[in-house]
Length: 619
Ligand SMILES: Nc1ncnc2c1ncn2[C@@H]1O[C@H](COP(=O)(O)OP(=O)(O)OP(=O)(O)O)[C@@H](O)[C@H]1O
Ligand SMILES: [Mg+2]
Image (cartoon, rainbow, N blue to C red; front, side, top):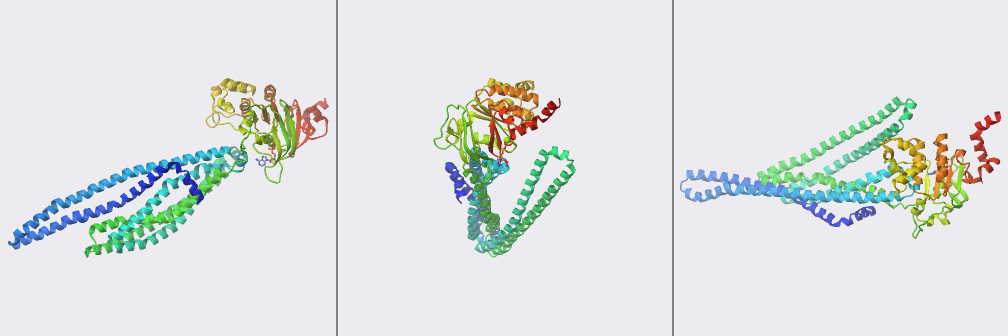
């Protein structure tokens, strides 16, 4: 219920509209109850009056013929009856028709205004909640996003919010209107004829109970449908994305058969759904027909005996149609409420997740970053009990170029994630220019620390915009300079659209090396004080690597640079090389020092230059 109240709090700014919608809903509902009463008047006070006047006139005229003495006496009566038959009764019918027209017109106008207001409220609610969720998702830490499946996040931003929207602009309002309808119509039934009303009310539980028992099965089947549908889409997406693997292993037939299995399962469930729906239709048809039958049989005899007017009977039959379905919805309301409540809980759970990495109050904005980096007894673990970084100490002065070398999974990227403050260390502290990162404003840190990651994401916009993403204030010339520095300019100039070339879905595909270089340009355009290059040369061929290396040595000048590399050719010139193993720094020195002593570095070096060394010793 707390989530429910909180959802309503999102509606508080639109209080006036909500009240308008409630009033409009009530008016529309009440107007809907009027027409059967108008039919009743038209029949009882119009048509029936005219008919009975006609018969009376006939009787009187016959009497006048047989008994001339009564002529004078009857004349006045006859002309009065004729007045009723020709004038007053048709007028009653016409008034009823005009009133009917007026009521229907008014009802439609109000209903238009009502659905407009409701839809506005619903969409506005979605707008606000989506905005909140999106803003919040952006702020949540990398750790949260790494743990939470993208699919779940998407479901929250789209599906769950829509479910709540449905409740606000649909079910809640229908519930209100159903409740009013039920009370008003049942009251009306009792006013018209209490015995018939009693019978109808007695039928309601049968209808509701059997309907709900079907609904339970239908919901189960719907869930199954939903599950199979997700499964089907999941398989499709995965196998299409991995079509290369499917083909490479000649698994086309296997995958087709596998997929057909899902399609067939879905077909069977769909047919079960249709079957259930038809049976439900049949059942509810029978019960409401039973109700109508009772009204006609019993009501008919009441009319014959003069206990009920024909108009009232007609009105009664109309009202019966208003009873059964609202009764089901009112009883079932709790169910749809539960669905929406679960969705609300999930949305609020996301909104309530505090970002682990956040500016603390009074965080410092660094006006200028020099680029002195210090790790002091830093320990960090992604998962409890297993340290990815274990008591690391290192100090890098402004403008130094250091390299991190070590086996895959040693913790090199993790160390740099700590410097970007994607995560906070479990123990110890990471400092830039003598300030613990936790004391600094995230923005001022990340503006001056740029990372070219191992796996880079480019967005589906033009090449130029991708480069400028790093610094929207940069002008085109700066972007071009960055691309030149990343050895990408010549390649871009050969494209027909040059810097305006689109990337991604509708644009060109870049090779692994081109992506890395574009990411490098995007990092360089911020003119960072600290530059982190996580294995940026891995996807380059020897010649391109040499060119990028040369370009890099220019851009690295004056910046504190961290180079992570598997290929030692990229690190030989570094001021210092840290050898990392199992999250610890196990050795440090220049290339020359490290190859001279026993250790991991020399092993890696030997491995990489084996062929070159062997051919040398052979000659
Ligand atoms: N998001 C994560 N959640 C949990 N564990 C992680 C995560 N990222 C990395 N790890 C683990 O932390 C350890 C260090 O990973 P890291 O990515 O820092 O290695 P690396 O030295 O950069 O390796 P490579 O040279 O292959 O890039 C590995 O054991 C890895 O499995
Ligand atoms: Mg790595």
